[in-house]
Amino acid sequence: MSDSILIALAMGSYMVVIIGIGLYYAKRSNSSTEEYLLGGRSLGPYVTALSAGASDMSGWLLMGLPGLAYWSGIGSPFWTAVGLAIGTYLNWLIVAKRLRVYSTVADDAITLPDYFSNRFREQDEQSKPIMGIASIFILIFFTVYAASCFVTVGKLFSGLFGVGYVPMMIVGAVFVVAYTFIGGFLAETTSDFMQGIVMIIALLTVLVLGVNHAGGVQAVVENAREIPGFLDFFGISVPAVDEAGAQLVSNGQPVFEGSESLGWIVILSSFAWGLGYFGMPQVLIKFMAIRDPKEVKVARQVGSVWAFVSLFVAIAIGIIGRVLIPTEFGTLAAAENVFATLIQAMVNPFFAGIVMAGILAATISSADSYLLIGASAFSQNLYKGIFKKEASDKRVLAMTRLTLVVMTVLGILLSLDENSVIFNIVSYAWAGFGATFGPLMLCSLFTSRITRGGAIAGMVAGGVTVIIWNLLESNFGGIFAVYELLPAFIISFAAILIVSNMTKQNPRVTEQHDRFIETYNTY
Image 1: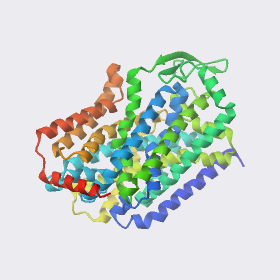
Image 2 (image 1 turned 180 degrees about the vertical axis):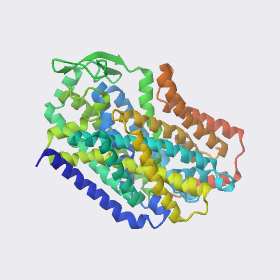
Image 3 (image 1 turned 135 degrees about the horizontal axis):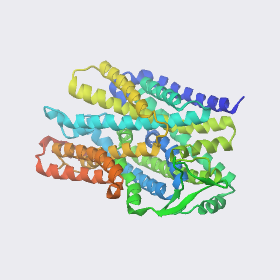
Image 4 (image 1 turned 180 degrees about the horizontal axis):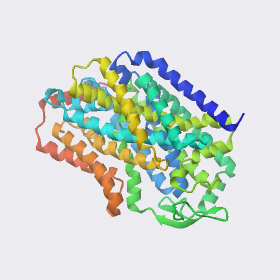
């Protein structure tokens, strides 16, 4: 039996299990919109922790981050990982429990737009601009996010089986939407939990085997030090490339132009990734779904350890890859296959297929979250919340599934270029969510002085700044080279505070916030 068949058999077995999970939860998920979109707030602490981590990190953890470390060294990915590790812990510490309690106090909100809308008592007003704006930004940025997952699947399957990128990307996208279509939130979350376990096992397996193949930790470090700036926390290696952008090779070794200082803009930009957590819908929705606010502490400990280990092991794999297969990948986009290439070279094909399921697991766990939350933003918040308030549960579920299909098609169209760099796609969507919702989430949980006008101004300012800043960076560079999340986050915060001081607060918002404080203090 050929290696490809064995790998396909192992991965196929995994996919059958995933489909089985979807079918198992199908009946319960279809019982109501709340069950389909939030699972009836029934998640235990371990499922909450690992499903939040798996849906958050996605294929970016197993492809994008190791690829960046392989290409330019430890500097930039290290500061990104530090920012993300801190952001993960702080999000669990200061947001998770408060959001779980407040989402029930705010008329039992089951989606993020629901929460923001109910938090500022839009049900007392004639219109619901907060719900509408939040839903539109979720649809935009989650379609981009889903595209990054489809790129991951296309690269993985194309490299494994020697089939064209586009058909493999489409097959992966169809599988993800079919699975989410059937099972809803509980299926997505349960598979995320399982996939979180698979991901950490896959990472640790490649780490241990890679170090062993390289001759030990000391051998890895000594070889990596021969590349200028490769292990410099404040520097970056600069590969020498030809006119086509491929790295030059001389005497069987990759050629580097030298090293450069990271500079404060790059370090600050990398570190700023941690700010994004406060606005990530795929993580925040897990906080809303935990069954008991008292279990958040356990979930925080598990989730924080999982994130820390996963992030830094992923970087280590990129470094090991450069030592073991220094000339295998000529571009950053190609280097994102380093994890898959290493595991195929080091273990028997069937086990490689099981471990390879770690990448597939990460991708599926994220894509299904993105598609489901985006679809719910349209069906629950735009369709029922604004346009068809009398819509039945059955009609809302039908619209959710229709939106899943539309988002998938758009994501496929955005993923047609196989040279897309997963890290870059994810960074853009991450900034979009972090700046649009992060400042507002923090303000909404900690003060009653934020007004409806301030909330609207903050979301619009954050989301629009990300889009504009990204365009300015590509055209002008300089100060605009700082990661767009940082300036957009600051501008969003400023807009919330300034406009809130200029507008009048709804007394019922203050009453609701006081009720939240009383409820929160009982836990």
